[in-house]
Amino acid sequence: MIKIEGVSKIYNLGKQNEFYALNNASLEIDNGELVAIVGKSGAGKSTLMHIIACIDDYEKGKYTLGGQDVGKLGDSEKSLIRNQWIGIVLQDFALLERYSVLENVMIPFYFSPNKVKRSEQKKRAMELLKELSMEHLCNQKVNKLSGGQKQRVAIARAMITEPKILLADEPTGALDEKTSEEIMNAMRLMNKKGVTVIIVTHDMSVANQCERIIEIKDGCIYE
Ligand code: ADP
Ligand code: MG
Image (cartoon, rainbow, N blue to C red; front, side):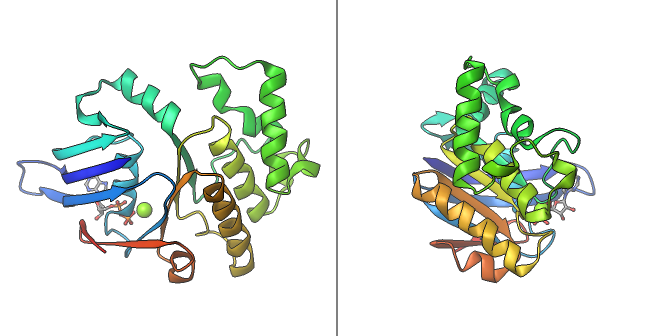
């Protein structure tokens, strides 16, 4: 499903401070996998994640997502493919703090090209919140929640448009061990439903809960 062939992300190309954040990286990830991407700070994990998510461009190589050559797509086509394929969870949650849990989960519908009826939006959001044991907090303002609860809201928001791939960049980075466990359970739950889950982490106890571990060092991929 995800096929990265000899991809390089080069900052300041041709200048004296030219820098390869990804260097000739190749990687294939199949539908339904649960994958961890590990590596030290600055290794290129987020860079790889942003390329997979069609957020960042790359300078060399080829990236195919579901058979489509991403490098040949324009910005609007890329945002369409992203909308259709990708859900993202970030370390700092990036939620609207003064809005309710339910409102936060429904945000992606404002940007989705597929029109879904408001009642259906709500139904889907409530189902996801139920799966994540957050349904009782649906009307709570996000700023009243704990870190683990916020991250579960972020997971529900990422999943609401039913993406095939769930990307998480250090989803447990701001959380204690017990709460990390809770978030990993939520990630595994999404994976069991058939979603391809890719988790960036520098925590080996998180990585060891995945089926496959990919390591990045200085922009190069090792497995
Ligand atoms: P990680 O997520 O593994 O910590 P990143 O993918 O964020 O690492 O970054 C990889 C490398 O690319 C780092 O050394 C970082 O300094 C460099 N980098 C990231 N963004 C830029 C930029 N806009 N210009 C130059 N270098 C950058
Ligand atoms: Mg990073």
